[in-house]
Length: 452
Ligand SMILES: Cc1cc2nc3c(=O)[nH]c(=O)nc-3n(C[C@H](O)[C@H](O)[C@H](O)COP(=O)(O)OP(=O)(O)OC[C@H]3O[C@@H](n4cnc5c(N)ncnc54)[C@H](O)[C@@H]3O)c2cc1C
Ligand code: SF4
View (cartoon, rainbow, N blue to C red):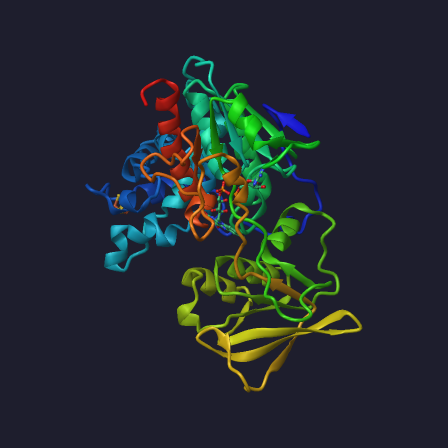
């Protein structure tokens, strides 16, 4: 177990992630001023409505344009404490920038994400103490998981005067924000730097306990039980995320060369021992954003990478702009094919056997085809690892395994337990996890202060 309240977190050198360049590097001052001055400061700005955390976009951009970068950062971070990450990883094309009025005139929308990244990173670099802490309340909240939902919640709780203890089963904090985001958007070290900033802001009020699994029954070494959290803390926040990668369920799947997408991306980002030596051809199974990230990352690393999707391109759940970007970097797509077997020779992976598919299912009797591969990445979704939530008496899961909350407060069926992020919404974006954490923190705070 590793316990931190301030830290200089860094990933080890020699990772494949380090070979990537950011596609949207940090603006310099001239670029930021030029872009900020394009903004029309719309009344009832659609970019604000489109932001899940409701950042006052025209106000922060106006502050950037007038040289008030610190004020701009405060405007952003008041609504979204992880605004530095979100400026880099948000799918702005489908959120704020996608709603910008410039689109209607077929002109490029304001680069809101890049301006946000510029404002927050510049302000933190100049003077990290952007907010004052409220006096200590004497209350302590336990947070399960150290993903963006819990990190944002812990930061906001600390600013309001509470202590926060975050339990994370992995030894690296940040959840998928550190270990899942495509490296051409943001590297793991940037996510860790942001966590270190939140810890610094909290001035010792947040404790990160890494390598500690929260479990249902009696706790062993490096574990803590749900019952102990309920007994020992004033409130609990569950930021559990999703679970392990789902499997295809086809013959030959178990064995060397076939790996789940999030497990593979985690190693690519954090494990210097991962190499792609001997991998010339890779197949990525799936049609969502994780599949798109995996195929794009492999293609960028020089592997002949092809995505195999069981429906047509038009029906892919992944973003069209991400597919277009992956194609620019050499990724291929095979549509309307479903995997039916992993073909091995003497145990070694040689191909993925696929059949023509209709409505996402292999067509019986149709001639299969072998797609040669040295690596198969399975990106067809993540299992739910939310059963632990039920160890907190009264917390319920819906039929899809998501933690049930009151949407107005994010409180669960246990009056002492709140929840947010992927484990509640089923898997969205970092900004949604932060938005839900914000709702939960407001409710936790008023409950702890006796208003509810
Ligand atoms: C490959 C991939 C790429 C993505 N790219 C983007 C992107 O570009 N932009 C974007 O906005 N979003 C992206 N997302 C989605 C985004 O990362 C998630 O929505 C976000 O991280 C959810 O935050 P969270 O805190 O709810 O969960 P997570 O980030 O999953 O964090 C949950 C944490 O809880 C820990 N945990 C779980 N159970 C326990 C337990 N019992 N005890 C202790 N710890 C526990 C886990 O180890 C984990 O660290 C991506 C997701 C994936 C899979
Ligand atoms: S919609 Fe576009 S132009 Fe209008 S305030 Fe938002 S970013 Fe500026």
